[in-house]
Amino acid sequence: MTKTDAQYLDKLKKAITDVTGYPYEEIIAKSRKNEIVVMRFILCYLLKENTIMSLQSIGELIDGRDHSTIINAVRVVNDWKSVPSMYANNLRLLREVKDAAR
Image (tube, rainbow, N blue to C red):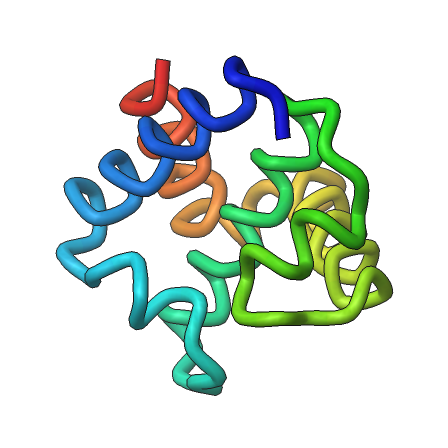
Protein backbone atom coordinates (compact mmCIF):
# COMPACT_ATOMS: atom_id res chain seq x y z
CA MET A 1 0.00 0.00 0.00
CA THR A 2 1.37 3.37 -0.95
CA LYS A 3 1.58 6.24 1.50
CA THR A 4 -1.18 8.05 -0.41
CA ASP A 5 -3.42 4.96 -0.26
CA ALA A 6 -2.78 4.62 3.48
CA GLN A 7 -3.67 8.26 4.04
CA TYR A 8 -6.87 7.87 2.02
CA LEU A 9 -7.79 4.74 3.97
CA ASP A 10 -7.36 6.62 7.26
CA LYS A 11 -9.59 9.45 6.00
CA LEU A 12 -12.14 6.95 4.73
CA LYS A 13 -12.28 5.08 8.05
CA LYS A 14 -12.94 8.34 9.89
CA ALA A 15 -15.49 9.50 7.29
CA ILE A 16 -17.49 6.27 7.46
CA THR A 17 -17.54 6.34 11.24
CA ASP A 18 -18.53 10.03 11.30
CA VAL A 19 -21.31 9.63 8.71
CA THR A 20 -22.82 6.38 10.01
CA GLY A 21 -21.93 6.28 13.67
CA TYR A 22 -20.73 2.68 13.24
CA PRO A 23 -17.11 1.91 14.15
CA TYR A 24 -14.92 0.81 11.25
CA GLU A 25 -14.36 -2.59 12.87
CA GLU A 26 -18.11 -3.25 12.82
CA ILE A 27 -18.38 -2.28 9.15
CA ILE A 28 -15.66 -4.70 8.05
CA ALA A 29 -16.93 -7.53 10.28
CA LYS A 30 -19.02 -10.37 8.88
CA SER A 31 -22.38 -8.80 9.78
CA ARG A 32 -25.26 -9.18 7.33
CA LYS A 33 -27.29 -6.28 8.70
CA ASN A 34 -28.39 -4.26 5.68
CA GLU A 35 -27.01 -0.90 6.86
CA ILE A 36 -23.63 -2.51 7.60
CA VAL A 37 -23.54 -4.29 4.24
CA VAL A 38 -24.34 -1.03 2.42
CA MET A 39 -21.48 0.74 4.18
CA ARG A 40 -19.12 -2.17 3.46
CA PHE A 41 -20.03 -1.95 -0.25
CA ILE A 42 -19.40 1.80 -0.19
CA LEU A 43 -16.04 1.24 1.51
CA CYS A 44 -15.01 -1.33 -1.12
CA TYR A 45 -16.20 0.88 -3.96
CA LEU A 46 -14.37 3.99 -2.76
CA LEU A 47 -11.15 2.06 -2.11
CA LYS A 48 -11.28 0.58 -5.62
CA GLU A 49 -12.09 3.90 -7.27
CA ASN A 50 -9.69 6.12 -5.33
CA THR A 51 -6.59 4.01 -4.74
CA ILE A 52 -4.22 1.88 -6.77
CA MET A 53 -4.70 -1.05 -4.41
CA SER A 54 -5.34 -4.47 -5.88
CA LEU A 55 -8.65 -6.24 -5.30
CA GLN A 56 -6.82 -8.76 -3.14
CA SER A 57 -5.28 -5.99 -1.00
CA ILE A 58 -8.67 -4.34 -0.52
CA GLY A 59 -10.16 -7.71 0.44
CA GLU A 60 -7.45 -8.25 3.04
CA LEU A 61 -8.32 -4.89 4.60
CA ILE A 62 -12.00 -5.81 4.71
CA ASP A 63 -11.57 -8.64 7.22
CA GLY A 64 -9.83 -11.02 4.83
CA ARG A 65 -12.47 -11.02 2.11
CA ASP A 66 -11.84 -12.60 -1.30
CA HIS A 67 -11.17 -10.40 -4.34
CA SER A 68 -14.46 -11.55 -5.88
CA THR A 69 -16.32 -9.99 -2.94
CA ILE A 70 -14.75 -6.63 -3.82
CA ILE A 71 -15.73 -7.06 -7.48
CA ASN A 72 -19.31 -7.76 -6.39
CA ALA A 73 -19.42 -4.73 -4.07
CA VAL A 74 -18.21 -2.42 -6.87
CA ARG A 75 -20.78 -3.94 -9.26
CA VAL A 76 -23.60 -3.43 -6.74
CA VAL A 77 -22.70 0.24 -6.18
CA ASN A 78 -22.59 0.77 -9.95
CA ASP A 79 -26.02 -0.88 -10.17
CA TRP A 80 -27.33 1.62 -7.60
CA LYS A 81 -26.26 4.39 -9.94
CA SER A 82 -28.30 2.92 -12.80
CA VAL A 83 -31.54 3.19 -10.75
CA PRO A 84 -30.95 6.28 -8.60
CA SER A 85 -34.55 6.73 -7.48
CA MET A 86 -34.64 3.23 -5.99
CA TYR A 87 -31.32 3.61 -4.15
CA ALA A 88 -31.42 7.29 -3.23
CA ASN A 89 -30.50 6.70 0.43
CA ASN A 90 -27.53 4.50 -0.46
CA LEU A 91 -26.28 7.03 -3.02
CA ARG A 92 -26.69 9.83 -0.47
CA LEU A 93 -24.52 7.88 1.98
CA LEU A 94 -21.97 7.31 -0.78
CA ARG A 95 -21.78 11.05 -1.51
CA GLU A 96 -21.54 11.96 2.17
CA VAL A 97 -18.72 9.51 2.85
CA LYS A 98 -16.90 10.46 -0.36
CA ASP A 99 -17.11 14.16 0.52
CA ALA A 100 -16.06 13.57 4.14
CA ALA A 101 -13.01 11.56 3.02
CA ARG A 102 -11.59 14.38 0.91
